[in-house]
Length: 206
Image (cartoon, rainbow, N blue to C red; front, side, top):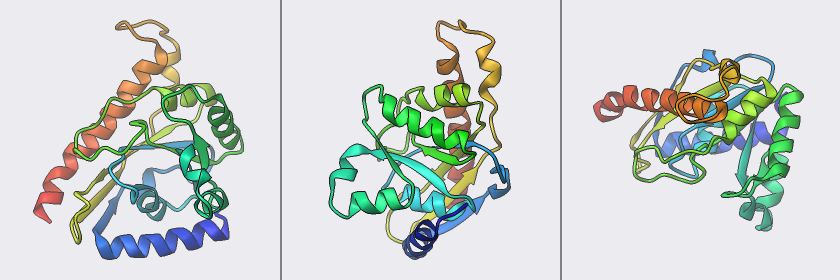
Protein backbone atom coordinates (compact mmCIF):
# COMPACT_ATOMS: atom_id res chain seq x y z
CA UNK A 1 0.00 0.00 0.00
CA UNK A 2 1.34 3.40 -1.03
CA UNK A 3 0.60 6.16 1.48
CA UNK A 4 -0.79 9.48 0.23
CA UNK A 5 2.17 11.53 1.49
CA UNK A 6 4.61 9.14 -0.20
CA UNK A 7 2.64 9.26 -3.44
CA UNK A 8 2.47 13.07 -3.49
CA UNK A 9 6.15 13.43 -2.52
CA UNK A 10 7.30 10.98 -5.20
CA UNK A 11 5.14 12.67 -7.82
CA UNK A 12 6.45 16.17 -7.07
CA UNK A 13 10.09 15.17 -6.70
CA UNK A 14 10.03 12.93 -9.76
CA UNK A 15 8.54 15.78 -11.85
CA UNK A 16 11.43 18.01 -10.75
CA UNK A 17 13.95 15.25 -11.44
CA UNK A 18 12.48 14.66 -14.90
CA UNK A 19 12.92 18.37 -15.66
CA UNK A 20 16.50 18.41 -14.41
CA UNK A 21 17.52 15.08 -16.00
CA UNK A 22 16.31 13.30 -19.12
CA UNK A 23 15.07 10.24 -17.30
CA UNK A 24 14.38 6.80 -18.78
CA UNK A 25 13.52 3.66 -16.82
CA UNK A 26 13.81 0.03 -17.92
CA UNK A 27 12.74 -3.19 -16.22
CA UNK A 28 9.90 -2.04 -13.93
CA UNK A 29 8.29 -5.42 -14.50
CA UNK A 30 11.13 -7.06 -12.57
CA UNK A 31 9.84 -5.72 -9.24
CA UNK A 32 7.55 -8.36 -7.65
CA UNK A 33 4.01 -7.01 -7.41
CA UNK A 34 3.61 -8.19 -3.83
CA UNK A 35 5.55 -9.68 -0.95
CA UNK A 36 8.79 -8.59 0.72
CA UNK A 37 11.51 -7.13 -1.51
CA UNK A 38 14.87 -5.48 -0.91
CA UNK A 39 15.83 -2.89 -3.53
CA UNK A 40 19.60 -2.36 -3.73
CA UNK A 41 21.03 0.47 -5.84
CA UNK A 42 24.21 2.40 -6.44
CA UNK A 43 24.24 5.86 -4.89
CA UNK A 44 25.51 8.98 -6.62
CA UNK A 45 23.16 11.78 -5.58
CA UNK A 46 20.47 12.90 -3.15
CA UNK A 47 18.17 12.55 -6.17
CA UNK A 48 18.49 8.75 -6.14
CA UNK A 49 15.64 7.98 -3.69
CA UNK A 50 13.00 10.08 -5.51
CA UNK A 51 14.23 8.77 -8.88
CA UNK A 52 13.89 5.16 -7.70
CA UNK A 53 10.61 5.93 -5.93
CA UNK A 54 9.22 7.52 -9.07
CA UNK A 55 10.37 4.56 -11.18
CA UNK A 56 8.71 1.80 -9.16
CA UNK A 57 4.97 1.41 -8.40
CA UNK A 58 5.31 0.17 -4.80
CA UNK A 59 6.20 2.27 -1.77
CA UNK A 60 9.87 1.91 -0.85
CA UNK A 61 10.97 2.32 2.76
CA UNK A 62 14.46 3.75 2.40
CA UNK A 63 17.23 3.50 4.97
CA UNK A 64 18.58 7.03 5.44
CA UNK A 65 21.49 8.29 7.52
CA UNK A 66 20.31 9.10 11.02
CA UNK A 67 21.73 12.66 10.94
CA UNK A 68 18.98 13.67 8.53
CA UNK A 69 16.29 12.79 11.06
CA UNK A 70 17.69 15.42 13.45
CA UNK A 71 16.97 18.23 10.99
CA UNK A 72 13.66 19.97 11.75
CA UNK A 73 10.94 19.24 9.19
CA UNK A 74 13.30 17.03 7.15
CA UNK A 75 13.19 14.30 9.79
CA UNK A 76 9.42 14.62 10.11
CA UNK A 77 8.99 14.37 6.35
CA UNK A 78 11.33 11.37 6.08
CA UNK A 79 9.32 9.45 8.66
CA UNK A 80 6.05 10.45 6.96
CA UNK A 81 7.20 8.82 3.70
CA UNK A 82 8.26 5.63 5.48
CA UNK A 83 12.02 6.15 5.66
CA UNK A 84 13.89 5.05 8.78
CA UNK A 85 17.31 5.96 10.22
CA UNK A 86 20.53 3.97 10.08
CA UNK A 87 23.85 4.79 11.71
CA UNK A 88 26.49 4.40 9.03
CA UNK A 89 29.73 2.61 9.81
CA UNK A 90 28.23 0.61 12.66
CA UNK A 91 26.25 -2.57 13.12
CA UNK A 92 22.97 -0.75 13.70
CA UNK A 93 20.71 -3.44 15.15
CA UNK A 94 17.83 -1.01 15.48
CA UNK A 95 17.68 -0.28 11.75
CA UNK A 96 18.15 -3.98 10.98
CA UNK A 97 15.18 -4.90 13.16
CA UNK A 98 13.06 -2.18 11.57
CA UNK A 99 13.95 -3.40 8.08
CA UNK A 100 13.17 -6.98 9.09
CA UNK A 101 9.82 -5.89 10.52
CA UNK A 102 8.89 -4.11 7.28
CA UNK A 103 9.85 -7.15 5.22
CA UNK A 104 7.79 -9.45 7.45
CA UNK A 105 4.86 -7.15 6.67
CA UNK A 106 5.47 -7.75 2.96
CA UNK A 107 6.88 -4.30 2.23
CA UNK A 108 9.75 -3.02 0.07
CA UNK A 109 12.96 -1.84 1.75
CA UNK A 110 15.43 0.36 -0.15
CA UNK A 111 19.14 0.17 0.65
CA UNK A 112 22.25 1.78 -0.85
CA UNK A 113 24.91 -0.85 -0.03
CA UNK A 114 27.80 1.56 -0.70
CA UNK A 115 26.72 3.41 2.44
CA UNK A 116 27.46 6.87 1.08
CA UNK A 117 27.17 8.85 -2.12
CA UNK A 118 29.68 7.90 -4.80
CA UNK A 119 30.50 10.84 -7.04
CA UNK A 120 33.21 9.10 -9.04
CA UNK A 121 31.08 6.73 -11.11
CA UNK A 122 32.77 3.51 -10.01
CA UNK A 123 31.09 1.44 -7.31
CA UNK A 124 32.51 1.82 -3.82
CA UNK A 125 33.20 -1.24 -1.62
CA UNK A 126 29.86 -2.26 -0.16
CA UNK A 127 29.02 -3.78 3.20
CA UNK A 128 27.07 -7.03 3.32
CA UNK A 129 24.19 -5.69 5.43
CA UNK A 130 21.62 -5.90 2.63
CA UNK A 131 22.72 -9.44 1.75
CA UNK A 132 22.52 -10.51 5.39
CA UNK A 133 19.05 -8.95 5.63
CA UNK A 134 17.96 -10.88 2.54
CA UNK A 135 19.32 -14.17 3.89
CA UNK A 136 17.66 -13.58 7.27
CA UNK A 137 14.28 -12.48 5.91
CA UNK A 138 14.10 -14.68 2.81
CA UNK A 139 13.25 -11.61 0.71
CA UNK A 140 14.52 -11.41 -2.89
CA UNK A 141 16.90 -8.59 -3.84
CA UNK A 142 16.10 -6.42 -6.84
CA UNK A 143 19.26 -4.70 -8.16
CA UNK A 144 18.90 -1.16 -9.53
CA UNK A 145 21.50 0.81 -11.46
CA UNK A 146 21.29 4.58 -11.93
CA UNK A 147 23.53 5.96 -14.66
CA UNK A 148 23.66 9.75 -14.63
CA UNK A 149 26.26 12.50 -14.38
CA UNK A 150 23.68 14.65 -12.54
CA UNK A 151 24.67 17.62 -14.63
CA UNK A 152 21.72 19.82 -15.55
CA UNK A 153 19.65 18.25 -18.36
CA UNK A 154 21.97 15.23 -18.57
CA UNK A 155 20.53 11.85 -19.50
CA UNK A 156 19.61 9.43 -16.70
CA UNK A 157 19.12 5.71 -17.28
CA UNK A 158 17.52 3.64 -14.50
CA UNK A 159 17.73 -0.11 -14.97
CA UNK A 160 15.85 -2.52 -12.70
CA UNK A 161 17.29 -6.02 -12.81
CA UNK A 162 15.68 -9.39 -12.21
CA UNK A 163 15.18 -10.47 -8.56
CA UNK A 164 18.07 -12.33 -6.92
CA UNK A 165 17.33 -15.18 -4.53
CA UNK A 166 20.28 -15.26 -2.12
CA UNK A 167 18.97 -18.17 -0.06
CA UNK A 168 21.19 -20.58 -1.98
CA UNK A 169 24.23 -18.96 -0.37
CA UNK A 170 23.13 -20.14 3.07
CA UNK A 171 24.13 -23.64 2.05
CA UNK A 172 27.82 -22.83 1.90
CA UNK A 173 28.87 -20.95 5.04
CA UNK A 174 32.50 -20.91 3.98
CA UNK A 175 33.72 -20.45 0.43
CA UNK A 176 36.44 -18.35 -1.15
CA UNK A 177 37.44 -17.15 2.30
CA UNK A 178 34.11 -15.41 3.05
CA UNK A 179 30.81 -16.21 4.69
CA UNK A 180 27.44 -16.54 2.96
CA UNK A 181 26.48 -12.86 3.33
CA UNK A 182 29.76 -11.67 1.81
CA UNK A 183 29.35 -14.05 -1.10
CA UNK A 184 25.76 -12.93 -1.66
CA UNK A 185 26.92 -9.31 -1.46
CA UNK A 186 29.42 -9.95 -4.26
CA UNK A 187 26.59 -11.31 -6.40
CA UNK A 188 24.31 -8.34 -5.71
CA UNK A 189 27.00 -5.73 -6.40
CA UNK A 190 28.14 -7.67 -9.45
CA UNK A 191 24.61 -7.49 -10.86
CA UNK A 192 24.43 -3.73 -10.22
CA UNK A 193 27.83 -3.29 -11.88
CA UNK A 194 26.65 -5.24 -14.93
CA UNK A 195 23.52 -3.08 -15.20
CA UNK A 196 25.66 0.05 -14.98
CA UNK A 197 28.00 -1.23 -17.69
CA UNK A 198 25.06 -1.90 -20.01
CA UNK A 199 23.82 1.67 -19.49
CA UNK A 200 27.03 3.51 -20.37
CA UNK A 201 26.49 3.49 -24.09
CA UNK A 202 22.91 4.70 -23.71
CA UNK A 203 23.92 7.60 -21.45
CA UNK A 204 26.70 8.69 -23.81
CA UNK A 205 24.47 8.20 -26.81
CA UNK A 206 21.83 10.47 -25.28
